[in-house]
Image 1 (cartoon, rainbow, N blue to C red):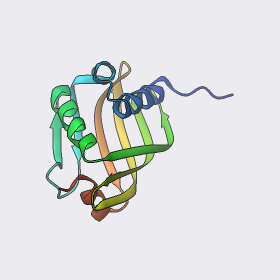
Image 2: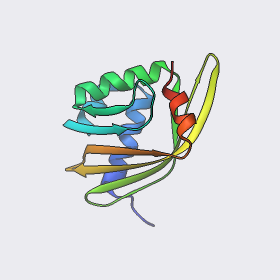
Image 3: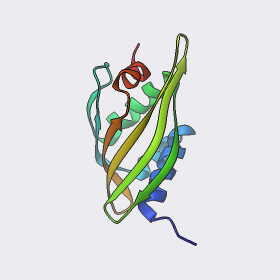
Image 4: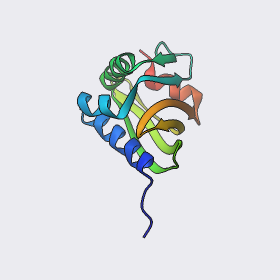
Length: 129
């Protein structure tokens, strides 16, 4: 039996904390100086810097009907890769795309995240108005 790397487990715990809106758990799992690189042409695209900015951004995303499911997560002492499907369901929008996310981890905390969506148009709709 293979044991999941602790950083992959930390990512899974972070995704679960997001889904359950557990801000305390999120704060413990991401570094205070975390950086997320969010692609796209939508109003929520750009570089998020710091835990407070990220948590505020995540609450905005949740209000847009955002959801995610993981297909596979694997990691090592510095990096995690998550293969996911992400989407949004709200009035007039029901869209999804597959996404590869690459993370940098240190001491069990997420330091940085890059998103690579398969369908950029669907990605922009997920975060659109």
